[in-house]
Length: 475
Image (tube, rainbow, N blue to C red; front, side):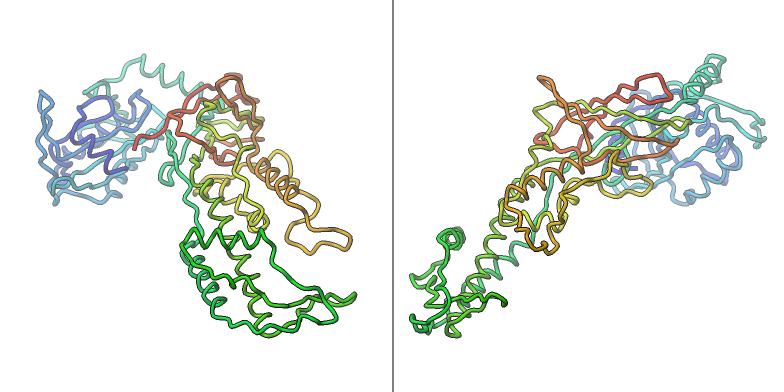
């Protein structure tokens, strides 16, 4: 139970089919108060309103809906298990009742929640309790607990007949919990850029300190080394970005040469200071290229929104061949084919470290099963990280990009279609059990926050097409 949400009820709500106010908490030392508690719980649990119901204690509500914020008598408070125990011992079928104490304006209020998950109506007394006879039953209608009618029973059993089928709906995750609404999050993925800048700056200082002793320019073997203009420009770009002054001789690597024999690895030939400076500059180029690449990539990633959705079977029957279609405004959804592609300097690392899994996979939530991909994931024939066999060259940037896009589309296992105004994300779930929760294939990603997402669900054993909407939670 969310405190801010409950405080809104305390301050502004009136009594209705979902809310009742009590001027004090039930005093279980008084037998009549135990009776009242059981009557209220049974009445709310039997309500035809589909949603959570709340008994809020510590508020005196007047006829004009003004209220006295009395708070509850703390000596009357019992443990939540005590309230659940009296319910379990006297009501059938079982009703789950949550209890919470919240503080507001230096006073305490006791909140009882009879959750929407209690869907096995009718609920009644399983045995006599003081003056309440076995089989006692009531229902909450408007602001009153009333006697139940034949029509009420007809509604219960009509719903039970419907529940003999699967009943699949879209759910969201709000603050790590399953919800009837969805929450929009924004990516906030960053490397430790401050640490990276510190290491780069330290390397620049180290290079500046080198007093270059040049070797002879007349060695008989090896090829004279030079720095690529593009690489020099990379270092200059970083220096300009962070106001670092580079002297004219910063890129002077002397007369260092490289020799590669037919049966040996490459060797450097030059003075110690030439070798040291050359290696440090090569290291610097790699560090700055990665730094600028990640900076560019994460600026794009962090401009994206996402949500995580699931399906839940709220019926009592197993079902197969579930086809789910989400309908989302084109102006809001980011098509997976346009997911940001890393620059050349870092794309291999993004792939090797499987950072796309982090960007697109749903978070792990207790009690939620992962989506089962309808086909095995198929990737290029060679993994990027292994040593390539003789005769194979390292893939070029285009091949990495193709691999990357393929990876995105494999994780986001949706068939995407569109019309003038909407994208349609369709996927198939093989099967779902009663009360089972299953993640959609991947996060849904947006360029702007949609207020609602429409959906349509078809299944093998339920001929009814379930059409509905899930709304964005208001924060």
